Length: 491
Ligand SMILES: *Cc1c(COP(=O)(O)O)cnc(C)c1O
Image 1 (cartoon, rainbow, N blue to C red):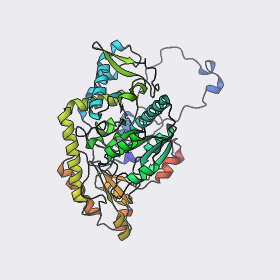
Image 2: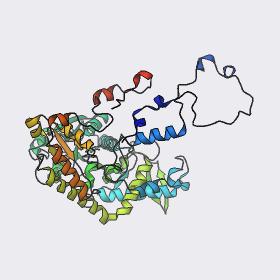
Image 3: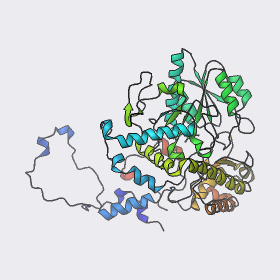
Image 4: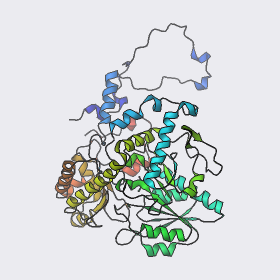
């Protein structure tokens, strides 16, 4: 049973005069504020804050915190997001005072431990990517894309080449075209072929001397490793362009294949996905980028360098594109990534990738009996199933299934992405889930695909809010409380 208090706003719990704290008697002379501040700066009445006791506050927020799904409470197969378990050891280490209590303006010699950690993280990412020059600055994967495209622009400016276009396949994440445009390029979409890989004919047709970068996600968002990637890199390089690897799916190939070895010139990591940083609701994340030697000089400031066992932040780089974020980046996320990498080691990382792929293929082998998997019998770390047939048969959509899964304690998979597959569900179990969990998810899917249209279309039945108008909620958010704005439906 849910605590009913969680259905109320804290303002509704307010009782006049109730207090959570008691102030000591004032022992200095009282001053009339109107003699200290101009009239315009004074409010006629105190702010309308809720008046509640300490237990009310604690219960209210504790109960609210249980209304959401999280990796700590539920299986979370959200495709492309790699919602693996976030080890608590990483949290403890990131909270050490030497990481969490320092000031970004402290002199380098007083933060040698942190700088050593960041330096070693740069080295590890260079090793995993096969690309030697690293910046830890970008604050998210999307920001890494933007930063790398700015690096590419600086490179072509120096060469005196006018290259105005960035290409990416139609299965790419929406951040790819967005980053291209923000970096000042025109964006051109390349078709996928029937197998879900890059359509080479379409690529050849759209390739010219104005192409700066081809962005490829490999494995791609359909959960497939595009084996043409070497050939694609050769084609792009022959025209003088660069290959950018969107590294969001690195969980599938860690320690097995290196982007620098299959033709990439630049890439980003999403440590909050691949290296188990807790994430959701827009952050926090990081988007370190790795680039080829010839692009290293353009990386943002600062990079961490080492001379005679002494680490420092290097701002003395004439060709750098400058800062892309304050200070050193999202250090807390980077510390967690470092702990993750050190915990697993090289062999462990390879096993992470193997188990992620094994789990996804196991789940695929179950799910395909209920929902068609258009790209066939094998996948990398995630796969796409489609509810198209179910929709034809009984008018039930991917959204209905996603909503109904919540009633059974499963976070929904990603739905309606990539845009190339109708009614798709993108399922990514990750390596941190057991066979029992995967079986329970498959059994639930089996059960709900058999339910009536009415039941599914009204789902979820067990949550406080069932089907909010998501567009309205995003476009017209209620940010200010008034007695009239109470919008939680009390079921
Ligand atoms: C998550 C993701 C991104 C964007 O990364 P953020 O860290 O969320 O900014 C880009 N491409 C793909 C394929 C992704 O899954």
